[in-house]
Each structure stands twice: as structure tokens, then as C-alpha cells.
Image (cartoon, rainbow, N blue to C red; front, side):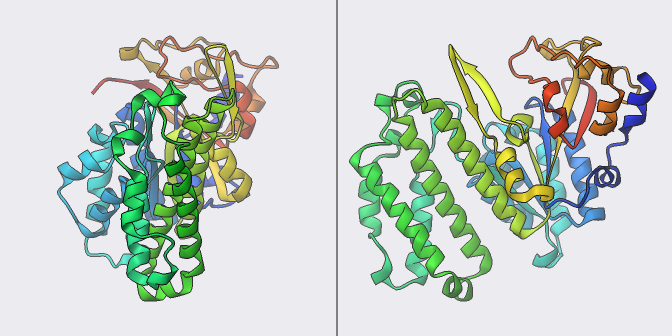
Length: 400
């Protein structure tokens, strides 16, 4: 069995990755089992460079606020801004503090310098403007979409004025109230104003779509594409806020599914543009149905990866990342009867594992699921191996 597992392990490089797959995917998803470990992001950065230089990939999309990501994209494509400020304002979830993320942005800017737009690398956040404690106000997305349409279409076609939009939105702190996550009565998502905003957002997106030929010709393709992002984000946020105000047993599953749908919609649009490396938590990218318990309430929903895979088929590939140890978080050497334990016996510090060969080399008994002593790390689910195209295994991480 050890020899069989050894035969399944290879170097983590673009050539080997492509050799595992039936075709070059438009979206190559690389998951991580925990956030905040630069050792994993270093693997990602190395792979992205190789995908750019050898396979023609042009975009990287990470699990970060899609609107904040525009700040990073402007910097890497045109040099707009100062790197320190880009890292502070271009990432959500605290990811801008990562040295590996900073190196990614610096390298992309250096790569793009002097290249024509058609050959430049692009950066995208594909998460909604969401945090665990709540959701952003829809103001930025709605007003930006309205301003774009105001600039390029006949005023008679606009369903509302900017002043009406501002009145309906009201104060932003009503939308961002963190108490609303645990108390639906604190949410403004089902007020008359919010319901009117949902209809307004739908009308604005419909107008954007109906005017597509004119808008692309009159403005630019990039400006039109960015307006589409504003539209998706506005409607997604308003939907999310609506379900924050819900009191039914399905509330949390609806919120999780709404976030996944926003992620998936952004990824599907990126797939239209260029081959893209997608980086996020394994749970957002897996093909299997996602599950969790909140108290006594079991929750199920389809992740962004599952949705995108259903649309894209072989155009979507998923590599899960597994870890041996995170000793500074109390995660020690994995038990030998787990997938991570079997891989930990390999000599490599990092390797790419062919899941088909791994499955053939495993004993008849299904490997035991690993139990993490730290809530921030999610071990591999052995039941998901069949729907995973490969595993990137990193033996040990260390605090930097």
C-alpha cells in the first residue's frame, strides 16, 4: 500500500496538474483547509506563476470581497494606488495582511508593467461583500450601477432617480447592524424600502442587459463588465438581507446558499474572460453537498464549486489541499488511519496526489475522518475523494 501511495504523489506543478485532468479547465479551483497560513499561499503563488507562463492563465480569483477586489485589479493592471493602501482596502476577511498575498499583488503588477491590456493578468475577488457578522449595505453596488446607466442611456429609461435611490437606501448602519445576524427582527431586509430596492435593482439589471450592444460600443467592455458585477452584487446583497430578516427554520441554509450563489455567479462570468485559478476554502469549492450543524439545526446547501461544476463540466476542476500539521494551532501529526496520516508518511514536504491512484492504493476499509482539535482547520472528508480531481498535500506549516 505504501508503494501505491508513493506512486500517486508527484511534484506540485502546472504540467502535472494538467496531466491529471481530461482537458484544460476554464476554472481551476485550488482549495485550502484553513485560512491564514502563508505556506499554503506560497504553493498557490508558485502554481499561479507556472499556469501563467506555461498554460495561458490570465486571472486569479480569491475568496475576498468582489467590490474590494476592484482596487487590486486597478493596481495590477494600471498601477493605480500605493501598494500599502491596496493591501489595506483591496481585501476582505483580513487577507490583506498576508505577506504571500502582498507578494502575489507585487508580482502581478511587475508582470503587467509594459504589457498591452490583452496580455495582462487580472485579479478578482469572487466572494460577496459579506462577513460572518453580517453583510454590507447595497449602496456602493446600486449607486455605481445607477451612475453607469445614467451616463450612457436615455434618462427616460431609468426607473428611478439617484435621489430616490438614496432615500430608499437610508443610513448604511441600518444594513450593517451586526445584531441582525442572530436576531432577524434587527434586519431591514424585508422593510418596504428594501422590497422596493429589490425591484429597482432588478429593473436596473434588466436595463443593463437590454442596452448591452449600445453600452459596449459607447463605453468600454471593461466598464460594461464592471457594471454587470455591480448588478450581480446589488441583487445578491438585497436577497441576502431579505433572508437575514426571515424567521423560518430555513433561514441559515438560505443565507449560506445565497452566498454560494453569489460566488458561483462571479466565477461563471470570470470563466467567460480567461482561464482562471480560483483560490478559496475547500468547502466553497467542493463538488459534494455542504453540511454543517448550528446548535441542533442541521444545514445543507450546494457550494459555489458544486454549482459551477454543474454548469461547466470538464471546464471546472477542483484540487483540495490537505495539511499534516499546524502545530502553532495545536494540530499535530495526523493519525495513520486517516488520509492525511497516510500522506504524512510520504517524504515530500509538498506533493500533488492523484486521487484515482490514491483510491486504488487505499485499504478496503474507508480511511477514518480526521478530527481537528482546532475549529479553524477542516480536515479532508474521505467520502469526497471521488469528486476531487487531486490533492495538494503540505506536510507541515510553521508560524512566520
